[in-house]
Image 1 (tube, rainbow, N blue to C red):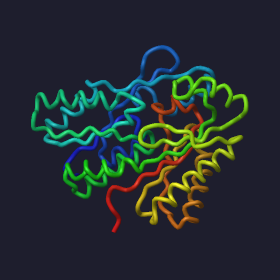
Image 2: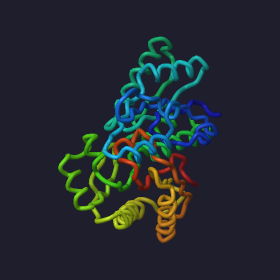
Image 3: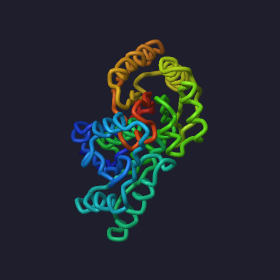
Length: 300
């Protein structure tokens, strides 16, 4: 293992096997299903159980809460006591106070260990693309990049992160305050499916389509435009398909993404990863899209 520990919050949505293999430490979020107590993500409630609840409770809306400063302090202090430097990658600060909690915890640790090296990064992305960003940190670590060099390179690439996606309906975004409630009602009535882009930490409208098939086609064409304008080789970026509750749909969509990349002569690996509860509370059970990020280790 390299010269620093990679830490992230529960928004990164990386599978357990990858977390173990790449030695990534996760500080989980908390999830509340309708009413009751907050449950620790992936410890007290699984992603599978989260989506099952959503599908069985139409019209009810779950909530998520960020890790506390104490949650981060427990992780940071343990790493520092073990003599490790830390790079902590958080969900976009425009969506959550996770970055703020981690920053407070960093100061708490530095009060005790003034020489500790802890970088807390606002990734400006979320969910499966945040996972890709975390994996780029691991690539730098495993390539024996210095702590400062890795932080600088990650800061360079984060602005290239894009998520292009669609959802089953706008009601979850509406309840969460991401869009106006009127827009949510109108879209449901007209079967309008929004195309949404996430860039530099915020969501932006990228168009609308009538029905699911056309919305997926629009996601593909929007991603195609971004890729063709910014990349000339498949080795220079990572791309990931993210989905909610319908893996079969995601597999079919991945095939179309692969065909699109082949047409651009940008073929590369395309993993499929599940969007977890942190973002699922806002997107509902049927989000699907792609995340794109420039690679940190420059291809030769």
